Image 1 (cartoon, each protein chain N blue to C red):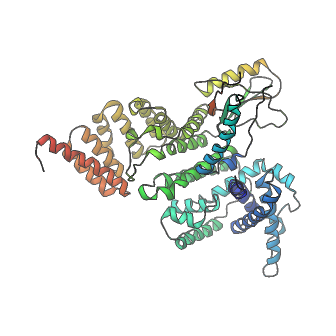
Image 2 (image 1 turned 90 degrees about the vertical axis):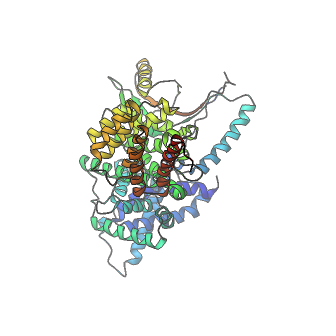
Length: 124
Length: 422
């Protein structure tokens, strides 16, 4: 069984870390990651840019609504994600619109640029 | 992370929201700051045992408000209490508070707290000092070090500024859309002042002032989270990230300035660049250009060039032309001339800056740029005059040293050319 571990934290707190604190946290996390990697069980790892860089597509009855910021509704749950390569945000929005048309109803898609992406590759 | 480290980060992170809300309750900055301090002391005792609350800001507001009310009750014997309505909603529980924090009031609280630091009667340096003290929670000592003054002098400055703020009487009602937009613009300018105070540091003051850049970026991110659809706030945040990304490459070991084209681009901070580029990309979608967005777009073109010769100077020229229309200023024209010099050659650039001589006769960069262009045109004697004027107007030892290095180059050239040996 493949599992995704989703990382939650407070941006207020994380953006208050000094560079040294940030480096110390990252070093500790990478140690854990390396252990899982040695076991041959590590898939892709990603770190997202802050939610200030997010754009959200909300499903509506008509054209999807494009809004700045993260997906803020609490009535919907995170059910999955795609990682795509795009030249511009505009292109990512177009892709997300296509997904949205293929899956109309409630909810939406949050588009977040990646800061770090390690494909992993041990797990196919 | 140790208890103290994460608690400290949580307290710093929650400070603008907490002090902003407490200011609304008490209508008095000193009372709000004191209540926040009391809440922090309680947090330091309580959180290591019970863990962090789900919403640290809401916890601090509730505890701070109660401690403030207690303090007011204790003072009651000496002086009359403020009107009961000024200390509103004393029955609130943490849950309702947390709910309300997500709403508009919370964002107006933080905006108000930032806005009172932008009092037009306060000189720029005082606005920065007050913002760092009140909003960021830097100690007077830290701020004094950044401004190279004694602790007591900085303490006095901040106290005086706070008195002016109290007299200014910023209204506590939620602002309407126009007032909110005006506040946002003033706050953005103040945040950029904080950034530039850090960014303009040179040589020996870098260590003390660099945290100001970090702080400005943190405030801008906070503002952007609350006003996520404002392209100019995206532009401001992007601009500061892209400029700060070059911090490690801007000075050599001796503290001398390294020009953009001579910088080791592998030292640029890729994470900051990624965030800056993402934000400017996002801002552009709105098609509501503004000065911060244009400056960020210029910075983005530098960030995208992996080598100096890959820089898209023609596009930078166009962006500066846009900035000139939006914000006509001889300094903008001067910057545009640098781009024109790269795209079309030094003669065109020199022609562009000649008319600025009167307006920029006291401006270090004008003579630095002029000298550089004259040097490229092999007009050495005139270049020397311009460089000497620049040195006389330099704002820091690093700036003067940089120009002197150019003068030395002229002398060296002259020596080789004349075949003379000193």
